[in-house]
Length: 267
Image (cartoon, rainbow, N blue to C red):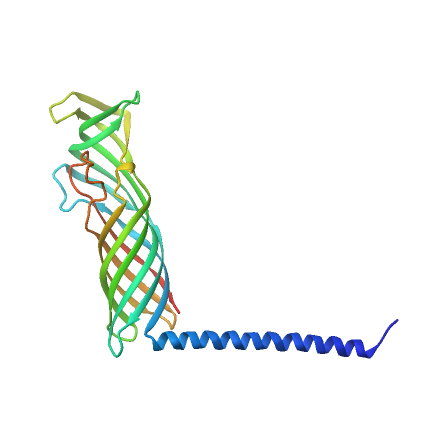
């Protein structure tokens, strides 16, 4: 059995050397990180990653006469992930913030309507376009890449307000549903009448008619709960119709109006 003490001494020295190198790398990395943070603070830059939910829906403003009753409205919990850079003006409470977000926005509704513009698929697969009177269920689920640009005002060390505009690009969209317990007048309100009653219904799908570029305004507030953790709320109000300009089936504009709430981690 070999009990050469020199081997043990060499192995201890090797371990100590490895530990020393690891400590050196850790100290160096921490130093670089600290210098980066200090440099960012001196330049007036702040970085933040946010995660939250969009709660709201698409709505006409004001509510048109065609919609006689909204029987239920159920917003979907659309996930939102956002990264932002904030540049503070030197010796000022004001800043400019530029962000990029991936987000989902959706809702489910049921309404009773009269002479509502509609294009449905009949039992035999034929398309029928005209004016619908009866019940309508609608499902909306859209995914966007959104770029907000905002002015930020620091009310206190813990509270900031922001306002600005956003531009969204539709990555994937769904606007569909069913009609039932009613009838459609083909072509116009005096056209051929096709009745759907009992268990009979017909689907519709306007997903391919959704507008790809959308824009609007954003108003929000952020509260610093801890040193790095923020709680925020942003109201996003769309200013253009969610449908393309040449889409004439629905005769009024629909605007996306959503409240985004969640948490942010500030670096």
